[in-house]
Structures are given as structure tokens and as C-alpha cells.
Length: 215
Ligand code: E4P
Image 1 (cartoon, rainbow, N blue to C red):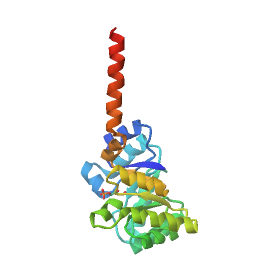
Image 2 (image 1 turned 45 degrees about the horizontal axis):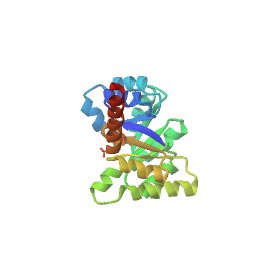
Image 3 (image 1 turned 180 degrees about the vertical axis):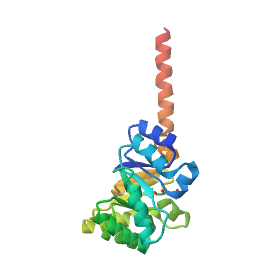
Image 4 (image 1 turned 135 degrees about the vertical axis):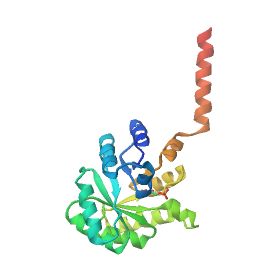
């Protein structure tokens, strides 16, 4: 399973990258806006830190506008993946970009039928948002299970990228279901390490060691 970090914060990206477990980065317009930096310059910074897929989202909603933005973003670095919203014009753009060998990440997916459209258009990744579904009392994880099964049934090459992850169980369940990628906020990456028995155990080992070495 690949781990992407879901952030546009360069310090978080550097810290997660230094852990040696990071395969890529996803950003979105809200995350980029929070950083208050020039988008292109920020992407140029990110590609220097992580040698893997970096998702950069378009903000136009018409075919021509999205295509123009996609081509400009793709020209920044070969690792840039173009993030496109799951709307009819977006799916047309995905089809065009897949014909040009430009990688795409179809975002804001909330149903299996939307995921089928993305796969048929040749998307590299589909991003179902599990946390936002849970927020409205729908099971985000049920959607992951459906998409993984449908893609397996037909051998679709589109990779399932679980997005809007809120806690470690989202990641564990995604892994059990065979999702290809999880994009994880930095705070959740930190939580993946946590276990009280690890802390208690380590403290005991170190104390026992110190007692013996005082003798
Ligand atoms: C997907 O790539 C999005 O950036 C992200 O996962 C959205 O998550 P949120 O629901 O926590 O905003």
C-alpha cells in the first residue's frame, strides 16, 4: 500500500518524508490556500522533497480552462498528477489527459457510479472521500469496498486512493480491503505510531537497563 501525505505544508512534508514511509503528496485548493504561498512555487518546493506522485488540483470547472491549467501544472515536473473534480467536464478532461499520458487523480468521489466513470475515462487515481461520507452518516469504508471490488471485477487500472482519512482505522480498513493508496493528514500519520503498551514497554526496558548499569 502506498502512503501519500494530504497537506500543502512543506514542514509536514519534510518531516513525513524523513520517516522513510512517504510515497507521494496530495494537495487541494483549501490546503494550498492555508499556506498563503504561490501555487507553482510551492509545487516546485514539494517536488524537490518527495520523489513520487504529487497531486495538484485545477480550479477551473470548464473543459478548456481545466485542460489549460492541467497542461501548465504538468509542465512543472513529471511527478505532477493533475487533480480533477468528478464532474462531466472533468471526466472529459481526464479522457483527454489520459490520451496525452498525463497522470490524473479524480477527486470529490462519493459514489461507486462516479468511480466507474473515472476508471472508464482512464484516470490514474480515484479519490473517494471517506471522512466526509462518515460525516453525513454514510459509510465511507463501504464505498471503498465497493470500488475495490468493481475495479477488480473488470481489471480497471485506476488506483483506489483513499482520501479524507480522519483516523488510523480508516487506513487499516483500507489496507484490508486492498486499496492501492491512502492519503493521510500529518496528524493521522503521527497517530499511526501510537500505542500505550509501546510507551509503557519502552519505559520499563530503559528503567531496568539503568538499574542494572548503576550496580
Ligand atoms: C483529497 O485528496 C483531499 O485533499 C482530502 O483528503 C480531503 O480531506 P478532508 O475531508 O479532510 O478535507
